[in-house]
Image (cartoon, rainbow, N blue to C red; front, side):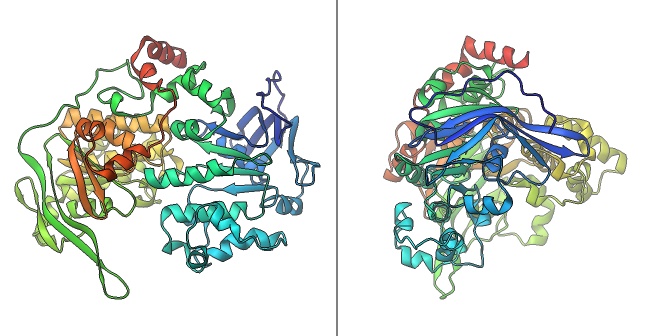
Length: 573
């Protein structure tokens, strides 16, 4: 790879001899359009007993760095560095730049453990969990270590070992993935977004596993876009932007007194109750929006609704039990709770994708759940949904224009010219460039796909949006842009929203009122400030207490002060 190294940057200091030392790493990919550099002149050091968090938005080079360290950068990757050395088990240094594929198979799992983000996808659905955890032991011909499962907090390990991944909760699946990565007793563990898309309590359980791993001869490289997770877990933080480390140092120092404009922008984009009514992506470039309580006639009424599922043994599992709520016109109701609490099922009931076993739903003052599907179909445009993963809901053969146009075709009242004009208006409304209309979903970023999903939902001119985890898989800056867009659209179009999320900071920022669900029941509800400031139910208190927080809460300062204006100006420059 013909890359000329720039000035040698200082390697961040750490105590003790390094477990991993990277100096001047460059990673580029050979594409038909030419050489694309993903990581540029990166230098890091991890000492034994240390947790280093590598943070930044999508595309900053975090995951490419992680995959390069385990020899999985890909066949088209061009890797160069002045130094990339790992201290092996026997004390000899391993030069990670000069390893053959057979040698890498000996290193992965034994010297370096790798934990991926999505445990359900990463675990083999055809193998029992015990076999999955034992794979590194078999691959490296090591003696079985029965304490591995207990070390990561898996209760009843014998029972869990005989189960398949789909039979475990999200938190247990993630623990099984960590146990598999630790089975070979590696000296370095790389965790790539290990808690993304987990609810607050499960996330806290997984983070406690990582906290317990830090010891004298072991190090962790944590890849995350969640600054609060980095603050809670990491010893040091390195901030990446466009393939480069722009700031690094002790976690408390970097996150409480950031020096680089990009780091300050990341902190300003973190949603909380204190950011309600403010723009997260550009706090000083546009007027604030209202988050005052909304009065008036309810648009959606859910009355004493229950829904159950039959277990294989014939018994009934109640997913939603005697739930009542209402959403006013122009109001956002946040629904929070752990995985399995009934949030998504409640959203499906509101969309009339599931019929309640008892109770009923009214929409716009008229019966909704009691209608036949034939009678409901002409009214469906009034309620639309924005999902967590729009890519899985798009036809990959369709262009963006065709995706947004679909609801307009169903209306039947617009000719081709009118539809194209409407699509152009919608793409502008959600802040996307017209040239993206010719692309297919796979050629878009996560934030762009989410905006296309919003444009498609708005094409039907709905009154109510059901937003089911719409930003959980997005990095903090892209999340901020999407949340600002939804708030702006609510103000301009008078939309009502049911906002389902496990992220309490997002719900607190976006909602007028909140309902807390546990095991299919709403245990507490009320105005956002009332529930967050004075929670009454023990479960609500435990849920709020489990949310990771920045140790020195400077994000409100950066989002509301003169420093924010200076930050935005320097970033634009």
